[in-house]
Image 1 (cartoon, rainbow, N blue to C red):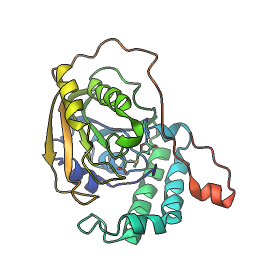
Image 2: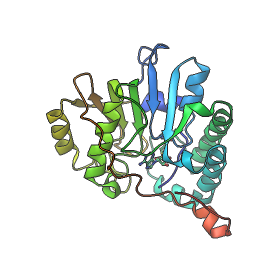
Image 3: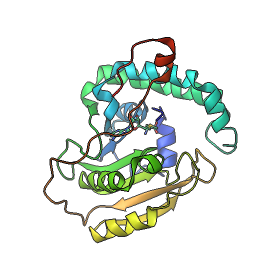
Image 4: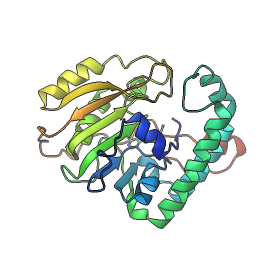
Length: 255
Ligand SMILES: C[S@@+](CC[C@H](N)C(=O)[O-])C[C@H]1O[C@@H](n2cnc3c(N)ncnc32)[C@H](O)[C@@H]1O
């Protein structure tokens, strides 16, 4: 799994965020945030946003630098994989590396300056009380890695994101990274969520990373009352491997 570092402008586009959505009175959760600069840039705009990622338990300030090194290390693979991403946000792999490096640098400064804004936790279990946030944003995990994570994890993760959201959860994209196809179990998951009182819709947005991957799933959470929490739910899966560290013999301690 790649730890990425998208920007506030990308988050605005991929989650279709309006000025009203970003109203300064709203609390926003970004999970998983990786080394994205959304929370950093939101903070500069006076928006009350919090980042969560499993990697913050292992790497904090260091994460931004790791992401910069790792994306450079994987340049050839990224160039190959993104060759047909013609309408994407990035002109080519070098542009992606340049943008992610700039965003990761912003992240690195902010996690050092405002550590309380960056919470180490792993879906499907978040250390927040019910309805802690107005809006929850989740990019490039739940469906992107859907084939590896499995439906049990996805259902638990979506319910957990909905538990901490008072208003909406937005998940982008709904395509699987490996295949570029819409996640096959999406319809079934939406039906199950509806049974739990969580409404959903799929919306097109003005952003795509992979060709055709320009849709987000929106969960409406106002009618959802989460059952009492079970302490036995599974923790993190599919850990990040920092391959540039393995190849150079540099020690690595990723979860
Ligand atoms: C591709 S990155 C996306 C980061 C950011 N949203 C973006 O678009 O730039 C995926 C992130 O998911 C995190 N992750 C993977 N499994 C997780 C879990 N169970 N709970 C929380 N974070 C997780 C990884 O550490 C990684 O930073």
